[in-house]
Image (cartoon, helix red, strand yellow):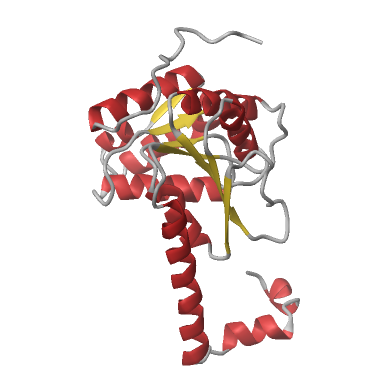
Length: 246
């Protein structure tokens, strides 16, 4: 942060940066964190097989990424998966719409923000969080696959966290699917030319992710992984062989 921006800080912000909060203030903050965590675990404890879909809140519903999310949401709901998203607009709304209209359960884990984030109308269950890190934990806790569509800092943050947890063995090697080949090509190239070449990750770590533009292909990967993991799905309807183009 440069000096001109520091000069514009309010007195409250300056005090927060220069003073350590009291022990009791920190204690009550910890209680709030624990309550959010407990409430999320309690509300989602009976969630069946689930897939978390991540992506930007800023895309219109006719954006190609939103259309991919809606199609994927419908396909997964038809196979018996619960859809978990951040609960907001954009790609989250598109995925929830696809799942809800297909008769599935859609869970939205909303974060309270001053701008751009409010629950979309296609949720069968909505939870609200104050702390980002509690919400991130809940987004991955009950899912058996993670799908990342184009997004911003938040999406990249969540993708890096999921990959780190799988890489370090903290969670099983569930499918991690990147949808939007053109969007993710720069990310993939950077991983190869920088991280792999400088040996900050192993080349085999690149296999933790699958990239596609095809919602049907993504749904197949997720269903096949679920079968290998012994996760029972409550659908007798097979995936279609092809998707109708509209």
